[in-house]
Amino acid sequence: MMDNTARLDHVVLWVRDPMASADFFEKAVGMEPIRLSEFSAGAVSFPSVRLNEETILDLMPLTMAERMTMLPGAAESSGHPVNHVCLALPGHDFDALRARLEERATPVTDMSHGSFGARGNAKRSFYFRDPDGNVFEARHYD
Image (cartoon, rainbow, N blue to C red; front, side, top):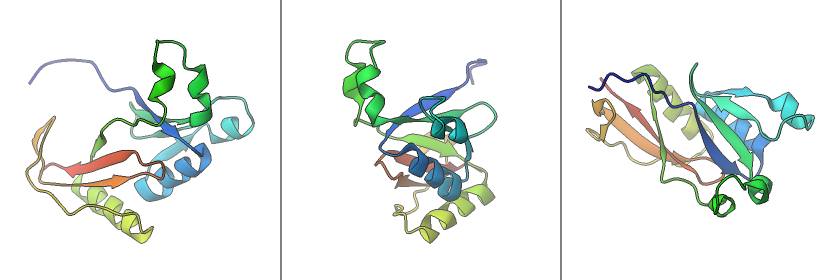
């Protein structure tokens, strides 16, 4: 395996309602919401949710798309989510996530086994969508 200190810092998701999205990621997925009060007060442009100590998901309001001028064509990415984001979890957290999603009646796919990822073949995995249609994969390695 490559010895590299690079880490994934954040992923930006386009969302219709950042507060509703933060609620989903907190209660269904188990992530910690951050900057909610600052967002509600208008002090920051978007809230985030924390995946772990190194990685967050920014919940960017679709209304911000017109301000995306840092790269030609960036505004057009609004409404075009990436194929999916994969969350690798320990077994007990994987099971708890699926249970929370099912409790909220969030559709989940059938369980897959042996799908390839950054750490080899996963023991189990499944997919689900957030309220804005962004696709997530949850996986558990041995």
